[in-house]
Amino acid sequence: MTFGASVRRTRRKQAKQGSSTMLASTVEALQSYVLNTGVIGIAEGLLGVLAVGGILSALLGQAGVRAAAVVAVVVAILGLFVLLVANKLEWRRRTELDRRLLRRYCDLLHERCDFTWRITDWRQVVTIDPNGDTRDRITFTAVPDCDALDFLTFWEGPHWEWPERYRRKTEVHVRSVELESDGGGTRFDVTTCWLSRGRLKVTVHLSEPALRDTEISLVAEFVFPAKCLPFVQGSPEEFVKKFSPGPEHLEYTVVLPPGCSGYWDGVGLRSGTASHSIQRRRNSNGCEEIHLVADGVATGARVGMKLDIK
Image (cartoon, rainbow, N blue to C red; front, top):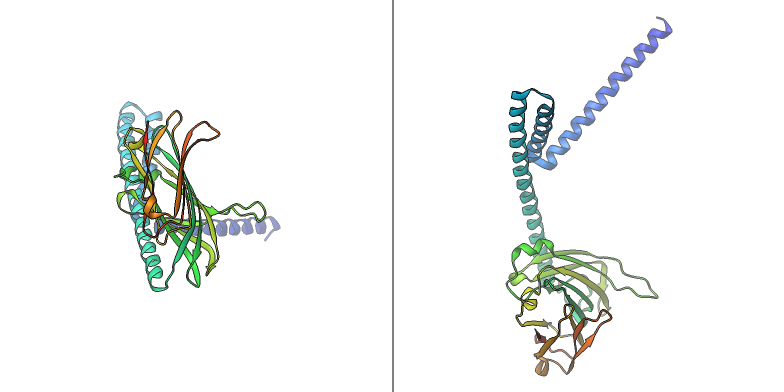
């Protein structure tokens, strides 16, 4: 056997091995795709191939073939759209199941393991846009009353029958408080669950357990579409909080839309706090703010303000 023939034989052998390796990788990728996407994923792929083939036939084929190809393309695209919607609904269903189970087990841990904490300081700023959208920023300090606290929960949301379609547009981020000397500001993992009347239950999963009587300082930032829509349309609205146990210090600031001014009445302040004050002021952007400060908030008391636009 000559040297050239030996080289050709070696190359053919390497090519066969490469083809076998490529085929094995392709089969493995297809298996993984099928396992992850199921029948809907396969149908999506087939419809996608059909749509591409139909487009090419419509561009390059004869008149009769083009007409049939156009029909095939329309059917394929409609079918692909239906399958995409079905796939999205299926993944949403799985996500909701995971959230319900996580919420359930967190509630069980809270009850069985005595996971308890108290809010000592709560400072909330609600900035209202002219269309009723709000940006809420809450800075609060929590103190564990148990040996080790792995997570904590709180609630926020509109105080009216908020349309369900806005839920998917809501955003929430929670991070540690930025300290000039010690750094900070990293985000925590957060899971959410919607309760009645548009209330959003937020569970903050701490990076490491917080020990008894240590302070946890967090900042929560929300974006709520149309949270204050009735308010900007002329209906009075309550901005109130309720704690158990009550915090030592509470600040609640409502920033009105540009060009708006407001009236207010206190809610639960005389019987629910040791001391309180409400002031009107202007911020650096010229918007009016209604600012509530309350100390010694009673446990279970509804404390806050009822506002109305002039």
